Length: 129
Image 1: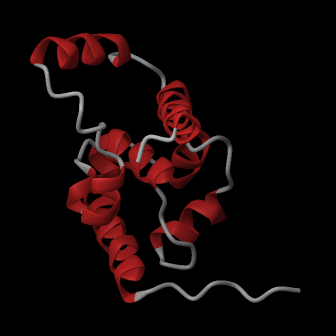
Image 2: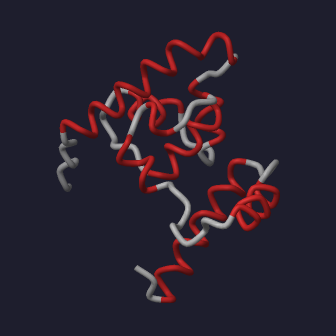
Image 3: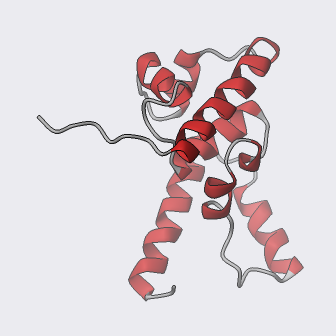
């Protein structure tokens, strides 16, 4: 049996900042940990709690879902993950950004996450740093 990874201070701070935001917004947005678990691909309420309480570290995929459902930028709880979730720097042309925004507008959370993962995989395969 392997030991669980010990979270860094930064990772714990991210989780606790996210929990604070969740606690402040859950009633207004009518969000439950069960609903968050469903949006995260059907994980359990306990697994969501592990993210919020700093047992498991946040990752970009999880941060994106929390961000969208809580209606806050990722940077409100994690500058590290916010940087990781940014669009590639070569997408700086306003018309290309508008086209991209229009293409992803309205995507379901799972499709949005899948699109990001696909882009990352393509980037890795093409050898772009």
